[in-house]
Length: 279
Ligand code: CAA
Ligand code: NAD
Image (cartoon, rainbow, N blue to C red):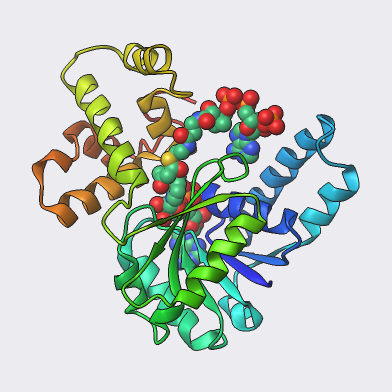
């Protein structure tokens, strides 16, 4: 399968790495070559660690990297069989990309979005191929996490669903079908915990380290909720909370004011160097 991954951030990079490691020629697209090369260097470093650990050979590393083709032109999507979009969690941005791709890509090309929370049915409605639009929601870090939530929009065809489910299995992930509701299952559950942890900090219940230690040692979570929020990106966490809040109209999903303030300050977590912790 020839694939284009759009967005060379932490998710797009991980998706491109996994697809290329599984023999798929994969374009990696972003708004600048500099961003893409930075991500390819990061992938190269992760693969080098795997070589050092004896998990893959140096040749396998080079072959995987050679299958990742950097591009800033959406026109390269013309001969692709699958698009996986992983840009910012914003409906206008995603709608704009998919309506452009609809004119460029061949009719058989499937459009998958890695959105964390946005309605696939609405994304599909921006195209003339709603039967070929689907959610393929990977977890972070993509090369490590086994789950892929698969979300069918109102018009997604059985054929599209079967292709994507099989692809997820072929790359050694575990697909779970989820209905097209705000936040799906993963973020409907996870972000409530993260938002509540931010409220604990906002109300002075404990320090960030205290809150994370409770959840790590008390619940055996690999990361505490504030560390995890920093890892996901606080801009993304806020965007997901807004989708949940507006989507369900229920005040239990109201984003904590402290989260809004951090995002306004540009404190996006690990990717910007500062969030609940400093990096
Ligand atoms: N890319 C690729 N591989 C990575 C990586 C990355 N960014 N970060 C870590 N790894 C690999 C390491 O190379 C290592 O591999 P080996 O086992 O082969 O040696 C393995 O992951 C474990 O890494 P470390 O030993 O360095 O660190 P760790 O044991 O603390 O594990 C972790 C790191 C896997 C990230 C772990 O802390 C964890 O599971 N955290 C929770 C992650 C999580 O909950 N993800 C879901 C977020 S929510 C989401 O994704 C949905 C959404 O829409 C927001
Ligand atoms: P990120 O901020 O790390 O990366 C986003 C990338 O998209 C940036 O490199 C940016 O330059 C690029 N981009 C923005 N507009 C673009 C455009 N018009 N064309 C091409 N590239 C563009 O974000 P991320 O954490 O990788 O998240 C990306 C998507 O994946 C979001 O929809 C997010 O909700 C979802 N997601 C995130 C996580 C997570 O843990 N961070 C997990 C699962 C899903």
